[in-house]
Length: 254
Length: 303
Ligand SMILES: Nc1ncnc2c1ncn2[C@@H]1O[C@H](COP(=O)(O)OP(=O)(O)O)[C@@H](O)[C@H]1O
Ligand SMILES: [Mg+2]
Image (cartoon, rainbow over all chains, first blue to last red; front, side, top):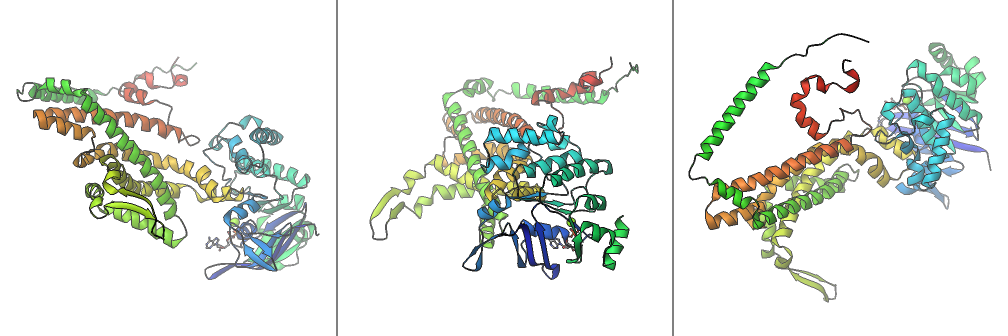
């Protein structure tokens, strides 16, 4: 078997008449940090959302650990999964959103243990213990019983990362995790992500933080108008891009 | 230590308005009291009369029962309304259209007389063997009719309230829940509905208070509620106005209790959202005196 955790194969996506993703193919290896950069409206979020099937691609197929996302492969054809089976697949894919999307009616602890306990991944006592441990590791041990509204944006986003981690996912998708933050809070979230990368988590990160990409990413994919224009090792794409469009974009964001 | 002696603003017009209103109330009370036809003693005598009390109990259970039916039905219909399936969606829309478009009074009388077109309910196997057979009139007692009639109608109204609540929840919440791997039913019951409740509870409380009073319509089918009992008694003794006052006093007691309950339920479901003070219903009632220094939070008090 390959060590490819994610295989995006010839994925296209249209919203009505407009084609947002045009025949995209990307592979992500186990433990790899892949950054997707590109101008607004390029289709970066849509690609990420297709990977955990919050959006359904119009054509093409996405595999996670060899299994097609949203389908069951039988006798050479792909049978669409029902909602419950799809939910089970999604449980193995973490996602961190730009706007955090913590559940405001639950405390920090309740946010973190909701999915593991409801889906019977862990007994409640164990879930609480590991939530407390994860929170302590990012310096938020004292926020256990606070509501999200009582936390700063940076703290909320770190809790959101812990919430995703609590499901012990195979892979975590980040959609511009620092874009909604005040500049002085960006660092604390990136620090948590760096630690995750160091621990060997497979990550796909849509970001405008070129500094983070240069330091942490293994590969960088540059996307424009629904296409991946340039892919390669982070150093190559960021220091000496082949494509003129990549150079123009990088000169504008750096 | 800061030392800025503050003299709070006076509100003289509040006192003038209060004096005028009290005066008017006293004049009205005197007018009624000096009226020889209105017998105060009758109000006192019948306020705790057993039949009236049993009417209060029936009114309470008809209201609570049809509210419960309305809530469950409302959630089901609202979920149907936000479903992608056009058939399910349309069916719910049709239900709401029908029950909101016809008077409850007509619906109540209709259900009460349903036995005319369906005299019996029979469940039989295709072979003709009868599983059970019941006469409609034995099932559709006034109490059942009242619950059914008011409950179905309430469901139609509640569905609109619940739907507004569901739509008020940010889509990011649903996506985050789905991304965590929660199946659709859990997304709804654990994430969306609890947040929707914050928007649902205030109008639902209004519906409940309104239903307490609307339940008096079931007196037309003699369901034994508060108004039915008051009517029965004044048909015997002709103290019509006195008994209507007795009934009204009880309705006021019930609606007041409902308002207090609503306040606490609202507070419960606003957890985690910006809190508008931690006053109890009673401290709110005392709010009139609140413009003096006593209303300042502890920490802000000049020392
Ligand atoms: N649900 C949707 N319906 C219609 N168009 C959409 C929808 N979501 C995204 N789009 C369009 O798809 C394009 C790509 O969007 P997106 O993936 O969010 O870009 P990015 O994340 O790179 O900024 C945009 O032109 C956007 O308007
Ligand atoms: Mg985006």
